[in-house]
Image (cartoon, rainbow, N blue to C red):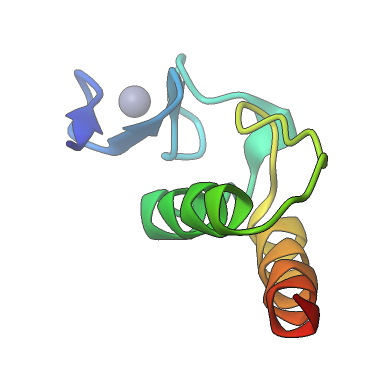
Length: 77
Ligand SMILES: [Zn+2]
């Protein structure tokens, strides 16, 4: 379920994705997408991974790297 900021942009875990918005955090310049986060959660559930993922601060590039890693782990099972 998507959440939207008062500026109209998508909010991911309380952070507005619009640069310059008062609710935008600089550390999340390029945050993981909602779809990526959901995908990672489902992969984590499917693998025995004890990986701890902080979805509040994960970047898009980090998320795609994590997805690759989890897909590999899944294949090895
Ligand atoms: Zn905003």
